[in-house]
Image 1: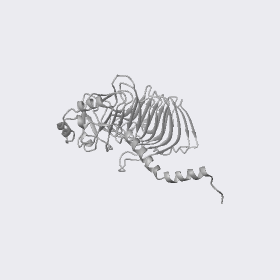
Image 2 (image 1 turned 90 degrees about the horizontal axis):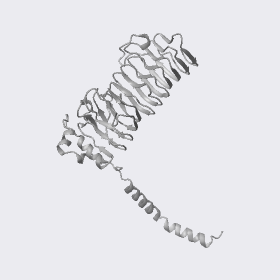
Image 3 (image 1 turned 90 degrees about the vertical axis):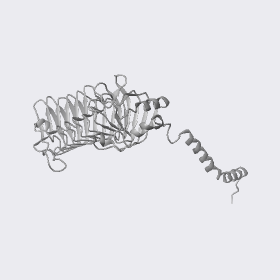
Image 4 (image 1 turned 180 degrees about the horizontal axis):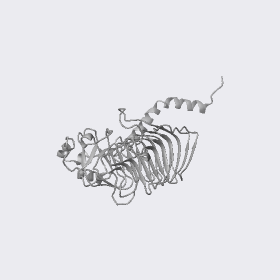
Length: 374
């Protein structure tokens, strides 16, 4: 048997004796780390800043009081505010969210919210106290998580505090309902990252976003457009979205470039599922169903309408159909309707989901279709 020298024996001795101490030391280190990063992550609750009567008001079936003062005062203490779930909803107006502010709540997001009653009992729900005023005014680097926001059809969901472009807004697990524009603004561009949100029952779901990323979200039952990109709303990535039942187009793009839509389902738009005018876009791995459900005009009864501009389309599947109950118009008439010098490259796609013809191509358009079913 080979002898172990003294130094090795000594090391093994102390290693064996010391081993039971190691888990204790490890636990102590974890405990110190836990104190450094407490479970609430530095958030303070809005509740201590609310008058007890106003807390009861938030938890009533019809809140009536302005709770803005509580959020304003809480933001003076910390930029990380927790809005605990309530039985009713919070009422705010014109609350300026400073740079770096994070508001966090816990909400069950309704699929649609056609009335403010639809957000009652859903958790951390918020509405505007004055219908003429926005709920929040945003500075750069603001994050919202877990809030159900119910607005007013004359007010946009993301209003700039300065009147200029707002950048680096982050929205996660939030609902935007009953706004003029759910995510975005008519008056300024927004750079925003959106994940796992529901944007429903607005006039327009999403608009005027730039350099933005939107994913894993539902954009549903908005009066006009699901997503509207126009005049400089460039350089956006949309992925893993469900865009459906929007009154006009699920996706409307005019005078915008460098936008990508992928891995998404677009269903039952009132007019063309995708409207493209003088724009550049990539559409990849998309299912487009039952477009043009409320239109009798041929160029509106189509999955994709393109007027000028360029589109690269890969791996899409088109399907015709009626409403979920089997009623309503069988649509669309066409899969692709192209005019006015439109340029398209279509590959590895199924364009057979139409009632009349797969492609309607007016003179002047340039269309290349490869390895696709028509």
